[in-house]
Length: 205
Image 1 (tube, rainbow, N blue to C red):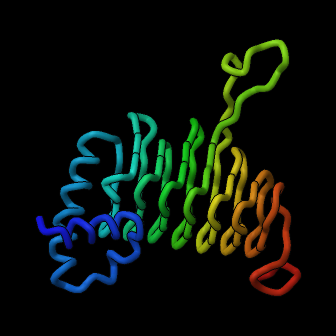
Image 2 (cartoon, rainbow, N blue to C red):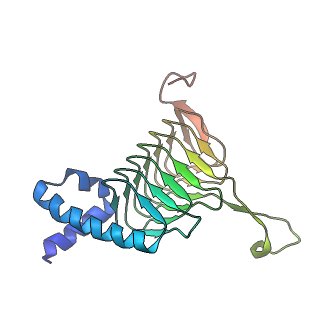
Image 3 (spheres, rainbow, N blue to C red):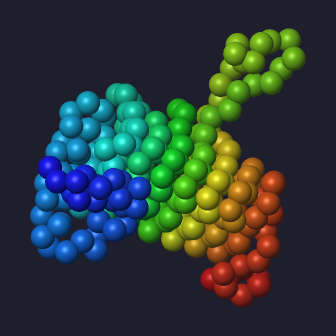
């Protein structure tokens, strides 16, 4: 394989949105490459893939039986991401490089057309913190994480178990989301707080 194609595959792995704008001569080999990557993945893990997805070969997807990862049509998962099911992604969801998502027992669900920037972390479980037991011996709980459609989550965001984020919300870079976010809200900070809305200030969108 020529060095140009090797480099182009690396570029696509870290910037998978480019896959959908490839010229026909490049899309031909890239589609064949993706079929091979995805075939290998589905043979090894409990992963269900929609049509025309992009999965970087450097992405790390782990889905034991009962912890299925479902990926909707035209969704993209970039290099160095870590996804542990149960996880369900809608249509055209973008998971950028080095995102971490662990579904715990209750799972992570993400709506259509949502964008998740680099190095975001989501953990759909939590440990107990009682003083009379070692942390490693604490019970683990899981309530799940729900993220709506057309949501933009900035880089380096952390989202804790039990949080629900409404449709069209925006989460600012570096935020720590510990409470539910209403539809259309813009939040930022640690802990994240509402700083505005995408629509009128009363929150209606």
